[in-house]
Length: 147
Length: 247
Image (cartoon, rainbow over all chains, first blue to last red; front, side):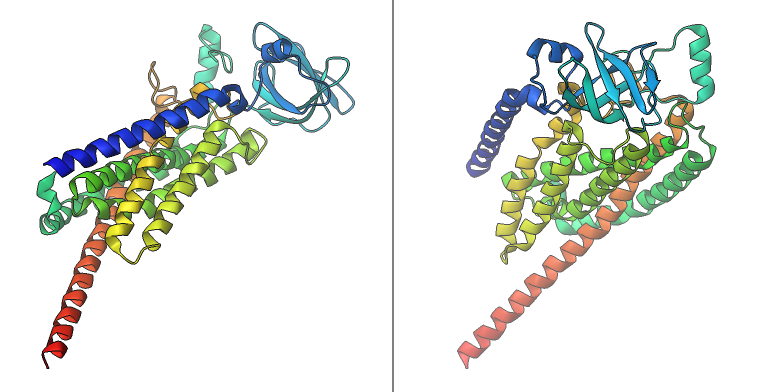
C-alpha cells in the first residue's frame, strides 16, 4: 500500500502546484486575455492615439448612420459609449442592440476608427416564430442582455 | 475498478457492451442528423447556419469529455499501475483529437458568416486550440519511447498536466471578454436553446458519446492484442537465446 499512497500524493501535489502556477499566471494576465475592452475600460484607461485594440459593446439604438460607404455608430456598455466609424461591409448580424467587437484605433477627435467589425452572437437559440412571440409578449431579452 | 485491470475480464465486458453502444450510436447519429438538418427550424438570427451547432457542440463536449476520461485513466494507471487504464488513455487520444479538430473546423465555418471572421485569438478559441496541441503532443510522446512502460508514464504525466486546461476552456467565456458566446446548454437557469433545436442536439450528443465508446472498445481491444503479441515475441526471443546459450 505504501508506494501507491506515495504515488497518489505525488500526483495530487504535482497537480495542485501546477494548477496554482497556471492559475496565478492567468490571474496576473487577467485583462490582457480579454479579446476586447468595454467603452468604460477605454474611458478609464485613456488609450493612447494610434494604438490598435478591440472595443466591444452593444450597438446603441438609433445611433447608426451612414454617409457614403462610412457607417458611424455608437457602442455602449450601459455606463459609457464610444463612437465608431467603419468603411467596409458590416457582418450580417450587425444591427441596433447587437453585440459587436471593433478592431481599430482612437483618433484625435475621440472617434474609434475601425478596421474590422465583428458581430457577437449570444447564447440564445430559437426559431423565428418563438422570437416573434416573445417580442409581442414583451419577454424578449435583447442581444447580450445579461452580459 | 481493479476487477477490470484484468485484460481478459475487460475484453469480456467490452464484447457485451459493443453491440449496444454501436446500435445507440447509429440510431442517435442517424436520427439526430436527419432531424437537425431537415426538420429542426432555422434560428431567428442565424437562419440555417444554426445547423452547424448539431456537429459543433457535441464535438466540443466530447473533445473535453474524452480528455477528462484520458486524464482520469492516466492518473489511475500512474498511481495504481492498472493494466488497462493506460491503454484506454492511449486509445482515447486520437478519437478526442479528432473531435477537437472537428470542433475547431465547424466553429470556424460558423464564425465566418456569423461573426465575420474565421478565427479570433480569444480565450475560448485559443484554449481549445491548445487542447488540440496537447492531444497531438500526447500521441507523439507515446511514439517517442521504445519502452512502452516508460512511454505510458511520460504520456500519463502530460495528460494530467494538460487537464488543467479543461476548466480554463469551460470558464474562459465567463472569466474574460471573448467573441465566443457563453454556454447555452449547461447554465444556472437551464438550457437557452428552444426545445425544437434542443432535442436533435441532445440526440447528437448521446450519439457522439456512444460512437466514442464503440470506437474506444475497438481500439483498446487492438491495443491489448498488440501488447500480448509483443510479450509473446519477447518470450520467444528469450527462449531462443537460452537455447543458443545451452548449445
